Length: 417
Image (cartoon, rainbow, N blue to C red; front, top):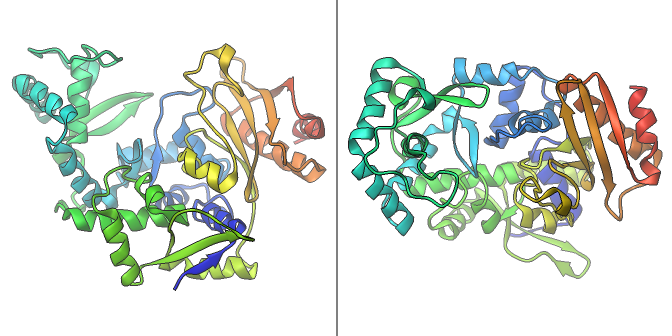
């Protein structure tokens, strides 16, 4: 049986499953874990023009919270760890068996890139063993504390050229031999996996098919609704061998349910699915009981919009990160936050946090062509900006001149909050 959905219902299911609608969790370690059990991964990025993206993603869902709680969960309680999901990410320690299977796939020498990497590792086997021996006997170390004893330098035309310590650490990390044990700012300290991974975690390696079965369901639940391509782009991005066959098995078992997304005579392309566990939520959304919209701001790396093609299809919202675009060629700004208002993406802001002066600069605010122009909308955006300022510890919000005329009240509304 195929369930028929409207685009509005599909968007609302996706937003609710992303924890961007409905009641908020408490801003506590337990509340953070509650969010992450649904998201399953949060991208890490070192840029702090506003705040680290991993902190912003949680703020969008929790509101004001203490980022130290996230550090506690990572480094003290070890309920979370850093690994590669759809990018370098924070993931759940309880999902280690899935990531461990992912690590084994990454070890396979099945491409020209991996053959080049394996040849470099073999040429530097004594260097590799030196790093592992130091971590075994000295405990966690930062890359700057490790001497470059490589005999062959890493060849690259990019930023990794000759960065042999960092390159070897990255390879040991993706292969599962070492883990990030803590951070001092953005500086990682590395430890052996056997030393850092909690004893309560199962070490067995899942079969490839079982890894995909589990990961595909996690990905789909986080998406709310999605196609095979979207499932493949999420969670353990690109590491879903035989995904279509496994999705067919899950449909036959009743674990996932086909849906068709239609508006009038137009049906969205592709085969779409929801997880069977989300059918009750969908029924509540259809009945109008579960939809509790919010207005918030989204990191450029937020899970809701990190798949740009999906974002354009579902929200008719074109978004690209302009961090690496020359300033004169940027359309919107360096570190743009999208405005989520209910079930729509209605605009974006170009913010910059000046930590020396304590000022949050909102350089520009942009509205989509069909964005609502009413007072409640400007009030909701103002409240989101004010809450962001509070989270960042800003003493003052400074607005630039680019603000849509109908949203000009945001300036006064924000100062009154």
